[in-house]
Image 1 (spheres, rainbow, N blue to C red):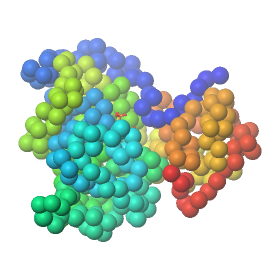
Image 2 (cartoon, rainbow, N blue to C red):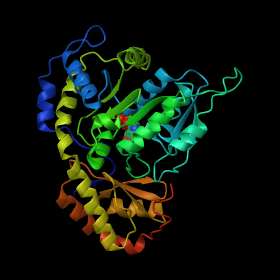
Image 3 (cartoon, protein in one colour):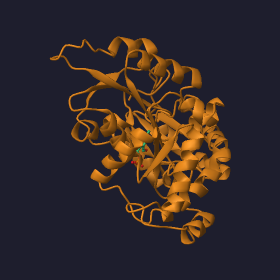
Image 4 (tube, rainbow, N blue to C red):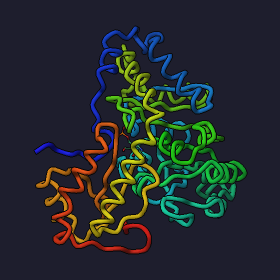
Length: 350
Ligand SMILES: Cc1ncc(COP(=O)(O)O)c(C=O)c1O
């Protein structure tokens, strides 16, 4: 039985064009000088995001770590939405490596979303030398663990403006900013507006085997480049993987197809009896009562997913065809009776 892999949009394999581009990439030692292909990729992504410069890093986690190391001083407080990737999924690096003290804000603006009022209320800086200072707002768009929900350009701008008024810097974890742009119709630059740093992932949904780009001002990225080196992230002939990243960008116009697959999956699951919210992007959370049992049933049926809180997480991507969605639904239908579902509010409890 062919495995249908919905665990993440990171499971995609490099396309033949990507492999060809990697094989023929023009390269140089990017620690000693500039790798020309890396240079092209960084410039291209920075341009897309409306920023001055870009810095390639191997992973999204390293992009966030480098950004936080660049912005925070030891003991600084930063604000971030509940269940942000930077909080629960990066092994405490904001504290361990960047010395930051997180303040988690609940989703008062809807699933995955915080409000400007929350930012204003929590941006506490008394100026007293013995009081903790809040210096950074760390956003995530789309919000992975909320089910791929996205902020539109106005929501993003309102949060950034509030942060700026309060003297906070802003880092945006835009691992799937591509998806937010496709879903809201906003440009990547509008969704990155005002953020001091923005990270995007070429390996999520776009098909590159690795690579993220951290964008911001040249001055900030000079600092970030040192942090990257400290983490062992300065690579030599990086053009080999940067070439894959350049080809990956060609997939941007196809992102809506992956959103349509998620909607098709949601509609099919609802038809079977599952209670699922309409996906905003390519992530779908399906609440179930018994996660281990449900995971086992799915695995036995050759449909691979990951658990997120009390839900099964499906992510659609370029290596799954529309016919794979229908096949998955056929396989899941007989399992429904055994997979007791639950529904609390309009989103799974996570
Ligand atoms: C929102 C978000 N940020 C960061 C990351 C980390 O990316 P990586 O796995 O490349 O380190 C992920 C991974 O899924 C993510 O979803």
